[in-house]
Length: 326
Ligand code: LMR
Image (cartoon, rainbow, N blue to C red):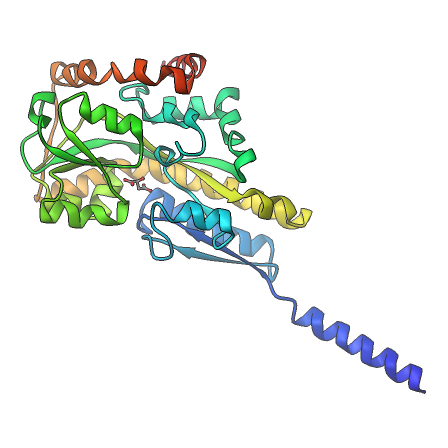
């Protein structure tokens, strides 16, 4: 009798704990707005992961530096306070110098060339280049080509001379602005609007979607269409956490990630120009279309930066990246 009671009690406890099994909570934090390619990809990942693994995972997305801003998010990932982040490729130099290849000015002709390079064997190797540091690369994600904005007319490198530009935490970008006689200042993305508005800096470089969604165009006079570089991302996880996930969860999450990246990339391709149009319609900053000669001046002034970083990045990687241009 007693034994039967014990068996029943144990069975009920087992049922209770199964019913109460908590989903794995996955925090996905980033610094941009929901409407951007990265913002949309993160929301899509939540939708797909929860659909593929019902009751098993709960994905919480934190946009706009709400949970962690630049500078803090990588630390938080390594400490396990957040599980997935997607920093721009310009923010990894502390962990691998190789990703600096993406910051070399005028290296890639367009986003298609960047995609070809990222999908090539050399590009894919970069996803694993930080595994020893506890970082697992889950995939590359696009945003777009960078444009340059300032509180004055900016057509040629001479116009940038003496101006203060906000940059991401990248030594290549620092060298790029020094090459045109400007003063680069490393600042978190969340601080840029305020810095532009108050005149702490005069200008910045970013993609159409970031400029529009952060309202940078409202506090800048001109945006020169330079297409001089790229902002793209690596979606990463803490590798200790990722490696320990049960196989079925890892499979579901990997599929959800691949699909969400595809959708984010499609938005980057299809909607990048629509943000430019929105900026035009707002009539706050003037968009300057540059002549071939003007673009050539920027290129000539900035290109010497390549040689400076060739040792750190590797000649082979730079050449492989160059080959991705058609
Ligand atoms: C920036 O800091 O300007 C960008 O990296 C922000 C982002 O994540 O697109």
